[in-house]
Length: 331
Image 1: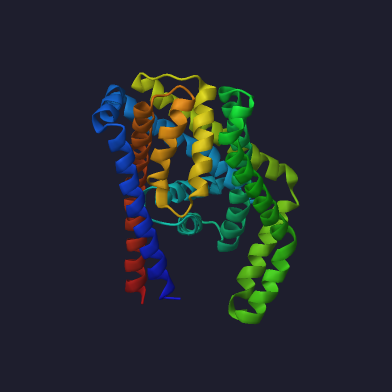
Image 2: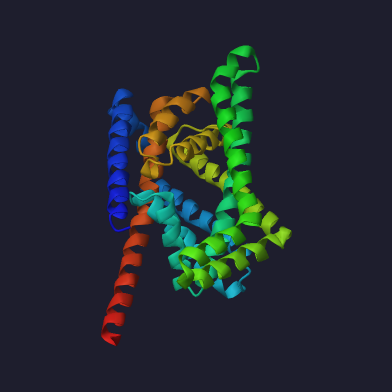
């Protein structure tokens, strides 16, 4: 196990470096000067407004997690904090999605949530976040089809997206079926191979099963994630407006929904480095946004994510260090 983890980390770092090189190459192709000039009009005040809008987005995201955790209202801040940490780790560190999810769960536990509840509800929350994204992507496909026209010539760009969407839908359906029917089999495997942690597996299974017995909470989780996806497009719309490149909101939804579908398809690349820049350069012009402005949007979003994520991770490091020191003194 210890040999695997360094290998996984090394792979993530290599993928991140390759993605960074691709991103730089894409921006260079479309002229660094033009991209930087497109970023200029936003100013410090505009950038702070963009950061504030993004931070506000974590309220519905935290609520979406909390609503399937069956926890009392007093623990809502723990789920919001956990969701912030998940995003910070994903955006700033060369982590896989799994690593960011583990950090989110750890943050919720430190906030007072039980390990079983944090882990089980996180599985449910992520599942319905993906379902919401599939709906969001479908809206983006419809908007792209409208933008390209519905003639035979529009089928080429749309077919790979539709095939990917169909495969993703089947995968999510299988994931949900496993949660509903396969967790007991997982318990039996744990009992056979790792009996010492069986009680943890049983507790997590109970949380998942209890969540699926309350469909209204699942619908609320789905609705909050749909709201969050469209609100995230609103954040991109705000950046473009402050840059002096306003687009209709639905055009921004089309770009953003297909962008995130592309990033998720390339999930092996940490933070979508290079993937995001290439997708923006391709999608922006399809919806009337010049490539240099689309790349400026990408860089401003990355700067926003760093401005939020770095302080959060530094705070996290301080909290964990203090806990370690207190543990050392106690021993």
